[in-house]
Length: 123
Image (tube, rainbow, N blue to C red; front, side, top):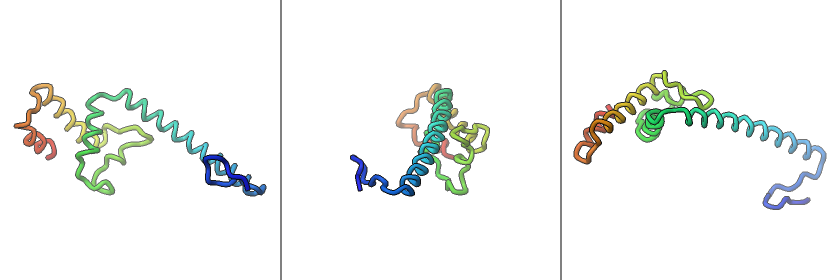
C-alpha cells in the first residue's frame, strides 16, 4: 500500500477501490464547480450592490435578535447567493441601513447620542 505525500489516505490497490475513488473525485469536482458558480454569482451581486446594501447585510449579521429557524426570514430571502431586497426581512434591514446613512450624512453620530440612536434603530 502506497501513501500519497501530504495525504493520510492510501492509494487504492484494487479495481473496485480505484473505481470508487474516481467516482468520489468526480462528484467532488462537480460540487466544486457548482460552488464556484454560486460564488461567482455572489461576488457579482456584491460588486454591484450599494454601500447601503452592504451596511444592511452587516447590520443584520451583527444586530438581528430574531430566531433564525423560524423568526427571521432573511436567509429564506437569499436564493443562490442573491438577496431578495423586496423580501420583508431585507426591506426592514434596508430601511434601518438607510436611516443610519441619512443620520450620518446629516449629523455624524457622537458618543453622547449613540445609545439613543441605536435604541431607536433596533425598535
